[in-house]
Image 1 (spheres, helix red, strand yellow):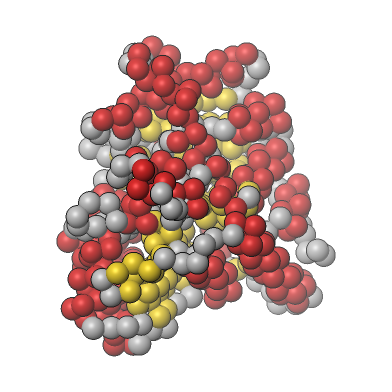
Image 2: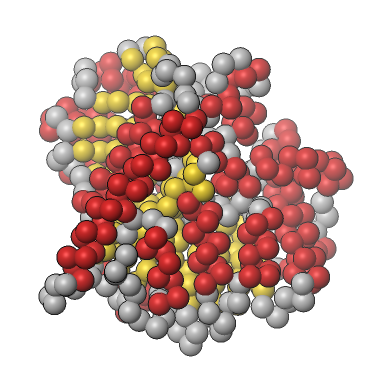
Length: 455
C-alpha cells in the first residue's frame, strides 16, 4: 500500500496497513466517554434518534429497568422509523436462568408487534450438539462466548468492553470510544451479519438453529470480508493521499479475534504493536482480568523495547468477588497469575522496565482493557487499542472479540486519550509488594494451572 504514516512518532507502525483495513477520519469524529452512566445515556439517545439502523453485539442484555427502557426505546423507534434492528448475543449467557435476554426480547416483540427486529444467539461450535446439555448452566459458558461489544446507531459505533447491562451502567469502570464513520460502521455491520448467519435465531417463542457450521468455510468468509475492506479502503486512502485539502489526522484499524475459526488478527497485531514501540517509549496496558498468554508474556519481556505498566483489577474491584462456587476463587487466581508473571519479570531482569498496578475504588469494579502508546519524550499517547479483548487466554483462544487500533496525529485527540488513561490510573497504586504477600487459597493454587485457559 502506498499510504504511510509520515510523522516520526508513528512511522515504525506502517506495517499495520497490511494487517487490517484502514478507516481514515478526522479526530472531530471521535468522542471518548469516561463514565458508565454517560455510556448509558449516550446509548439511549443514539438509539432513540436512529433513523436507519441499530445493530448491537454484546455478551448479553440485562433484565433490569435500565435495560428494559433501552430495549423499549429501540423497539419503539424501530416500529416508528421502520429501521433495521439487529441484536447479536451469546446463546449460553443470553438464555441463562428463567428470566434472561431472550425472554426479555420476546416480551417486547409480542407487545410491540414488530417484525423488523432480529435477535441472533451465537453458540460456539465446541458446544453444539450433546455438549450443550452436558455441562450445567454458567459452567457451559467457560467453553467459549460471543464477547464482542459493538453498539451501532446509523453511522456511529461505540467500541467498548462493557455489556448492555445495569452493572455496566453504574459503578463498573470500562472504556467507551464513539466513532462516526459510515465505512467503519458498515464493516462492523458486515461482521455482525456474518456471525448472525451462523447463529441461532429467535422466531416467535422458538429458537431456530442454523445449518451446521463448517469452521473452515466461515474462516474463509471472515478472511474474505477483511480482504474486501482492505482493498476498498486502500482505494480511499489512495484518493485522500492525492488530495491537498485532506484533513485526515486519525486512522482506525478494526481487529478481530475468533479462536474458533483461526482468526488471530487482534493477537497478531497487538503483538506487533508492542514489538514496534521504540526504546524510550511507554505502553500503558489495562485488563480487568490479568491472565496473559505465553505469547504476550514473551513479547512484553523479551521483544518489547518500551517501558510498560500493567493495570489490573484489585481483588476488591474484581466482578467475581464474592461469587458462589468456584467462581469466587477467580480474583485470587488472577493474583496468583500476577505473582508468577512477576517472577518472570525478575528472571528476565526487567524490573526497571515493568510496573504492575491495581485499580481499587470503593464500591466499584474494574473492567477496562486495552493499551495506550506514548512515543519517546511524549506526554500524550499517539495510539491506543480499545475493545472487548483482555490480552488473556480466553480472548485469544475461546471468545469472539472485536477491537480497534487507533493512531492519531491530532493534539486534541491525544490529549483526550491521555485524560482517559489518567482518569483510570487515578484509582491505581503500584501493588506488586501487596500481590506477592497476598494469601491464595490452596484449592486455587492447585487448580489454576489446569483451568487457566478458561478465565
